[in-house]
Each structure stands twice: as structure tokens, then as C-alpha cells.
Image 1 (cartoon, rainbow, N blue to C red):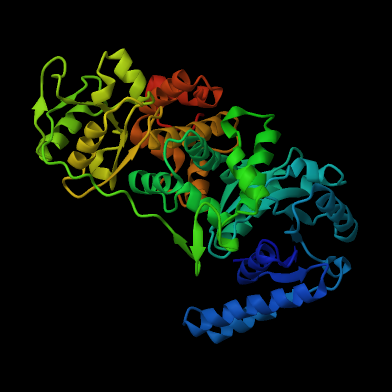
Image 2 (cartoon, rainbow, N blue to C red):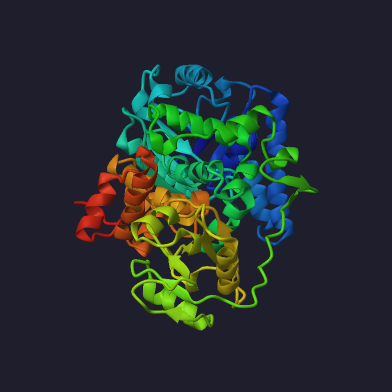
Length: 506
């Protein structure tokens, strides 16, 4: 196969630049590395060589292939050395003025047919190209770190980018072994935009005192299947990276409530408590390992009260069967007896609201999150209201832990924790499709590869049922009165007509 771009330059010899240079050389291109610091260029070349040598030592590359790759990687001492390159990839500091200046200089050096791309993660592709004479030949080409392992790249069209340029970049991404996804030039593109629902909602939950960092992380990993909890992820990426991205997307969307940052991360960033790399973030670290407090023990309960389940509980039949399997004494009357533990399972509402609306004794009322099928989760989540008696809380905790499954008990919250976070993830993804940021298919592919979600946001919405997600959002909006929870029209329409969230309109 003929390589789409035979001569490629990578400007910036940091981790991103090295990774891009590596996969471009592996795709068959002659690659030139350039950095304003000459020693950085040489170190980057040596580092890429070392990667290939390591792969050879593990039997994943043969000596001939390594020799060929090394022969295709060169260093450049000035921008003039790049004049024959057909593609130039910029991977330098995230400053609009510096990037614009660089590309204006490059345009004067390269041929008129050369393609220029930026690896920016948060700046506008259109704004960077504004000073160029040939903006049709300019695009975004956003890779993720570490580049050789993160197999997705966003191909971003600015307002004046030629479709033919995007097609060539798409084909080249495939030659480099990556999965290309097409995005329009909007704040955060696909991955960083879609990721807003995870961390920002978790921060809002913790700011309300619903649960601590570790509990939220455990719940979202065990109930949904995320590889890392939001606070583990913040510590890994570091707040000096993630908080500015949150602020940037929020401000670029003119303070859209769905993307509202948190004072929690702003304060921690100001105090230098940014994450694992400094040994202290939402967790403290010893020898690179997080110090996580153990979970509260299961209460010892000698005699369980009878259990009454609200007729409005979500997945009521499943919940009744679960209680039966756990050996509970189940009441079947129209209302609970004076001694019964009263269970509610709302979607979006808090336990307090349900107790008041259904005229239940709040002192004996406990909520359980039944958004997901219990058999598909590794943890059950219960919620008390401000009046719940401690004996009823402990009885519910011990009852639902009888089969050995982990149980978390949180304070009252509209939508518990999982419902709030998942509904926001699905809603933001739906609104991205409404904005035509990308296709539904590209969105789910980008998020699963770029963020490591167990399934894409839209596939997750389909799994839970768009009408259930909508119910959570409508009820959250009622509880909190916050426009951040308003459902996207795109989601509302598909929920109303029973259409898959992955359906593409003709």
C-alpha cells in the first residue's frame, strides 16, 4: 500500500510528538522531528529508537523491521529542513498565539500543496488557521497520550478545511494503525467534550456531601463498569491539566450549565494538590499507590424488620425477587405496617421527595438504586433521607449484603450517584449529536477508545432505555431546578418515538 504522506514532519519533541513520529515512521513515512531545543530533538529520536529496540527484545519486531524504522526517522535543525514535507504535525504548547505564528512561518517554507495539522486538544482549529493563506489545507489531528497505545485520532475540520484533506488524514490514520473519527471544530471536539458528564457531575455530588471521593469511585466502577472512578482519573491526569480543560470548554460554550466546573478542583489546583504525580490529590500516594480508606463494615443486625416495597419502585418485580432470595419477610399490603422497613427505588427523584409524595414515614424509608439490573452490577447502593432512623439504615445495609455483594450507603440525592452521572453522560452525548459535532457512531467509538468507557454513551443510553434516562433527567431538573439537567431535544425526540440513539438520520 502506498503511504498517503511519504514525507512527514513532527514539530515538538515531547511525549506526544515522539509518539506521533513513531507511528508515522511505522506507517512507512520518512519522518523529521523538529524542536526549538536541539537536544530535545536528539533525545526524542533516541527515545523512539529505544521503544523499537524494546519491542524487538520482546519478539514483537524483527531486526530488519527495526532497522527500516530507524532509517525513516530523522532530525531537523530548522524549519527550512522541512520544506519537502507533505504533512506537518504540530505538537507544541497549548497557546493560540504561538501556534498561529508557527503555522504562518511554515506556510512560507512549505509547498502550496502541503497539509498542516495541529494536535491541539482544546483550541479552535478555525482560530489557529485564521492567519493562513491556505486554510483549506489546515486541520486538527488530535491524538491521545500515549499515542502508540491510544488507538483513536480525531480528524477535525475547521470552517475552511477541504474535505479532501480530511479524507487523506483519515486514510493516513488507518495506515498508522489508528481509528479515525471525524469531528467538526467545536470546543473539546469529541472525546474531551463527551467526557464532561463524568467528572463534573461527580464533583457536584461530592460538593453536596452525598458521599466521599472513594465511595463515588467504588460505586461508578462497580455499578457501571468504569475502569477508573472520576477521582482516580482526576489524580491520574492531574488537575493542572484537567481543570483548565473544564474551564476552557465551559467558557467556550459561554457558561453552558452542563459543563460547569467546580470550586473543589479550582481550590485544589491553587493549593498544588493536583494528583498522583505530586503524591497527593483526591487520594494520597505511597510508592505510587493510592491510600484508600477501607469500606465501612456491614452492620450486625440480629433481627430484621419486615420489608414493604413502594408500588412505584423501578424494577419492582426484580426487587421483590431479590428480597425473597435474601430471605426478607415481605409485606404485600397497600401500605407498610408501623414496623416495616420501607423501600423506594426512584429514577431521578430523591428519597425525601418520594417519601413525601407517597405519604410514607421518612424515618423508616430507604432508597435503593435500581437503574441497572442488579445481576449486572457488583455493588448495591442505598440512600437514606435526613430523617431515616439508624436502625432502619443498618437493617437495609445488612439485608442487602447478606449474599456477600458490596453495599454502599449514601446520603439523600436526586438520582443517587450512578443515575446522575450516567444520565449526564448520555445527555451530553445526545446534545453533541444535536449540534452535529460528529456522527453517533463516531462518538461512541471515540469515547470507548479515548476514555476507556465500558460502552459508548449512546449504546449505554440504549441499554438502559432512552425513556428511563429521560425520566432521570426530568426528575433531576425538578429536584434541583438546575438547567444542567435539561434533556437534549435530540434525546427527547428519540425517546418519544422509541428510536435507537445510534440511529443516523438520512
